[in-house]
Image 1 (cartoon, rainbow, N blue to C red):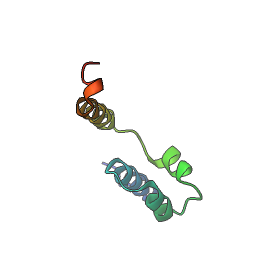
Image 2: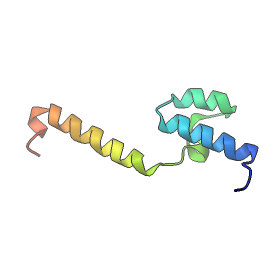
Image 3: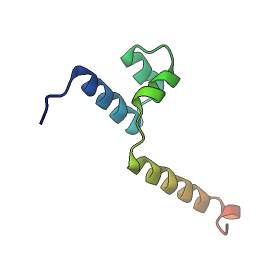
Length: 71
């Protein structure tokens, strides 16, 4: 297994921080980026589980709103 480069560790740390729910502005400052958009564009890889988490949250929200529960 090859040794990880410094950039690999930076990318992994940023991606995991965003995936764990860290404030994107905090991650931006940690990395020294000019904008949060740049941070998200470069380092916030979409993990497969993130899509499931979003779907579950939307489903739970739908169930909490009576008018939408039958949709």
